[in-house]
Length: 399
Image (cartoon, rainbow, N blue to C red; front, top):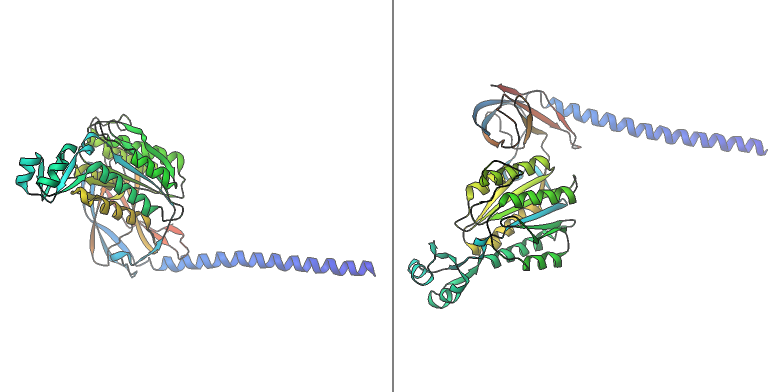
């Protein structure tokens, strides 16, 4: 009797295990079939798609290319990021701050040009008297009736506002890098979410020395490489109020300005998920250099000509960083630039509408060795599950 019962139990267990195994196999097969079906459906939409190179201009490492979409049925909505969903991501952010001697200068806002020249001996610009020493504060307020702005204090307050906004996003870490003639270690701080440490470090800042922007960017890159990870978004915010005048051996271009720009290019090329933003402070900021720094880093340039605008500018940068957009387009392009010895790939999210052309500009400084010999345009097919597959070649240009 016991033997017969044991056989029944054994049989039931075998049947149960078989059903579980069948269920697992079915789930796997179902997912494979669904994914394949999803991909095939997506591919069908690309049979009628066609994008061509309509114009091309190459000036050393600067490339201007016009693409024209001459066929296709996929609706592309790029205005206002209508085709994207908002996704808050964990980020590591380093604020790179100019602490050179010019940052110790102040301004007197809301004064006349006559009072600026006679009583303050400053540089007048649109109602503001700039490049003043601390001993002019009384003249500013009592004689000229202006509002005294301490550039270094404004920078401290703006950075405190930055970390206050960014710290509201869960998982965000913030670091600080101060620079003048070189990196100022005593003014810098590793990635942390400790607001007390960050604010205390900001309060300790002093200004003096020359301006080495590439030093600040290189140090931010080093800290992110050592302290961050591949899956986290990484941001560098580079602030400067004047001309960069110190070179870096790491870039070795022989020119301080070129070193600063190349440092941003190098950072972008060597660190995944990195975006570099730049901020120009005051009318003496070298906007050309800062714009190129942000362009090379895939970010944006922000201007605070009047020091009183600095906090608002940092607020805008913080809000820009807080929200990351995840593309839900099925149609993305990527463009590959080739030289004789290397290649570089860039994604294009903003696709032209059918029968409409669109211009794109690329700065390949530090990204490609030698002259461009070939350019290829490919589509990326994105399934609903987010899987990306490269489509057929759309167009090619050869030197």
